[in-house]
Length: 184
Image (cartoon, rainbow, N blue to C red; front, side):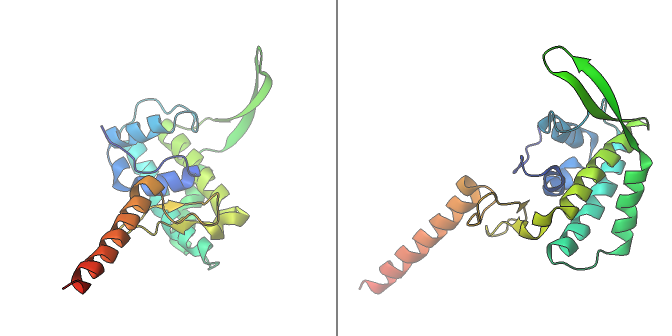
């Protein structure tokens, strides 16, 4: 089973952080299951869904990097994301559920790969246009490449119990190594 190191960030960051773990139908299916409730049910996952998601993920990375720094977005990724958004336009469909009342949910009529790509592209577009996009950070853990949107301004690691703990252990060993070297 595929595990994902960081989930629960904005959906666009979860997608970028998934990396190559979503490069095959099994990995993408596991990621979609881990995102339970955040995306419309996708049904069976095949090569077409993997290709559609890959296109969105590959466009999202450079666009996010530009947005974080206030730079002009690169043209090709921008065109790719816009193509995914246009591939499955949404309209709201009303439904009645006892207890919840009347709800309006987006409904897309395209084939499953295009619907999935459009939904993920919409999440990327929301993040890119969010005023907090400049606050997205890369984990400070050595060798870690995960991105997160900190809820607290002092957050430095993707997962404090993992990357934060590694940093604390490394500092501890460095301090004690100096002490051992200082003793005769």
